[in-house]
Length: 489
Image (cartoon, rainbow, N blue to C red; front, side, top):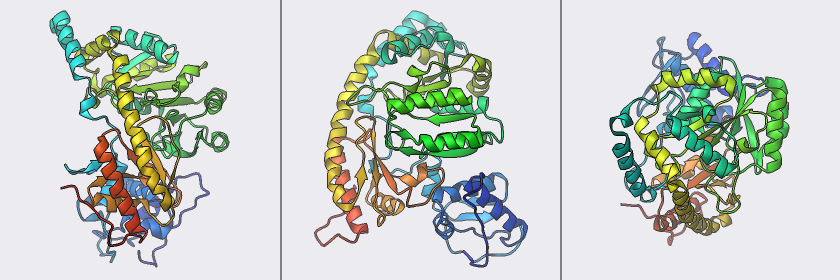
């Protein structure tokens, strides 16, 4: 970047860094410092210059594009949308980084996929679901295809109420349950229902980028609270509650994404007390509590005595992603607003699929399926743990989560997560660089990778970790003539 161009960011301000950066660039455009069709700096170069996280730059560019100050060209970069002078900046936007920040991963057919948390089709309960689909058609005939209630097919809501009681000791009446078309829709509905422009919302940092995008789209001010090994940092949370008075906290207490950490029981109890005392909601996103390879995990909602927790559960990650089926529990005072938001979104979720899933639960197929997938995933989990032990000699550290579908690896300072991602991708192994999950922060703080094993078979786990180790050795300058880099052709 031209050294004469001054961009000032103040980390002590309440305003997030990405908004400060967007404001700075907007002013430079208006003052004709950045002129029409000028190419803006790449994410990486500008982040390095300003000593901020790459995601800060990505989000600033997105804001500017939404407001019409810049436009992007695929494969080329981001350009100023008005005025008339070139600026000599010879960098390109990293398209893969932008895609990953939006929750999209570029994947070739032959890649070893450590990026996806979705299950493999071999584990889908096809025969059982085929059986309930046929039974519903025989039983309900044409009624199977009528619109159900907006809040969901009544018998399914009853089945889910029993399911929650039996599996999690959670009391949620059928009238409190809203059927949704997957977990992301639940997040979107709550964003529409709860957020007014300018509201502060808290998220764990790092967190799920889809939630960040949904809340930003409603004009929320996003505040990240650091994650510790046993859950969110409560000291910082309490400090920020007094400062910002949040509308809600979005959290994943069991096998948090991406860190894989689970909250201690003490932190769960304290979190609920804080929400009640300070009058904010907790949105609990639960998609992996069932995949515990040790002690069974209980959702935060199960110990919620104040009705402060809104519980979202998707069946996609454990059952079949294509079903797009889940539910959320609704506090009484939000019921009407969530119904309106759901109707606006898609009127109602598929009645046929709801009827089939109701029967699937009543026939106890879910329990049988969970037992099958737990066995398969626990074997993969133990295998990948064994394989990544060889990475410790390079200074890589991690906490064993004993559940879920991923591992969260802290890289040493001399290995950059983006560079490792690029090196692995060039060898047909796809990992996820930790930076894309962080709201704000410096590279040193975000220097992780996430390895997910849900979509990888056992042979490919061994092969993929070997390739990752070779890539790490190359980046550290430790590879010799005997090191082999094997492309998957």
